[in-house]
Length: 230
Image 1 (tube, rainbow, N blue to C red):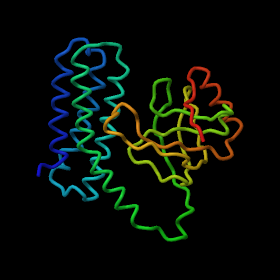
Image 2 (cartoon, rainbow, N blue to C red):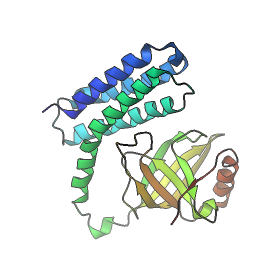
Image 3 (cartoon, helix red, strand yellow):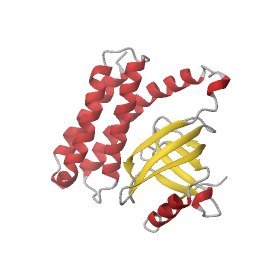
Image 4 (cartoon, rainbow, N blue to C red):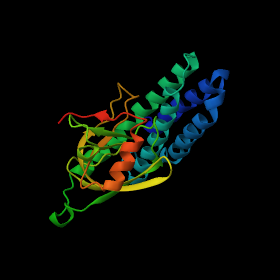
């Protein structure tokens, strides 16, 4: 049986070859190649490890994050060049190969119940990016349209379980750092049939600081929120 990491690397090579042959991608090529190269770098040692080993799973997760970023670059391009479609399909096939590895690891981890003393611990999530009008991370709200009653959707291939208490760190334009307490309100799993839909989790804010609320609302003047119905 061929290792999923090896098969994914072949798809990534196809993506690299396709995007480097089209001059219309020249402006975005540097960033695209950078993320594809990061994915290749993570998967190279993973090939020599057992599929379900912690080291392999960790490298696969990191590779998937890099591939998701490269796919985002392609989605933002305003072109119908055939190379874009070929590259996107190759990246999607690589993600389809890798996803079962992470999914299996998550199921195995879920079977190990945590002791009661640890179940109410607050986990820290560092979004580690500056939010922008085109990022996969985005704010959400419901019918009230009040962000204090909504939260932030964190794009990730490894969401926490629903109900988990978390502390989310992120930045807004102008280098405004925010640390907000929240609870995982919903989870959107990765769907291989819709690779351009970012997987992740919606973290509902708990006691959002007034100054942070004001900063978020100012940011939302340039970007609409994502609607989530209870």
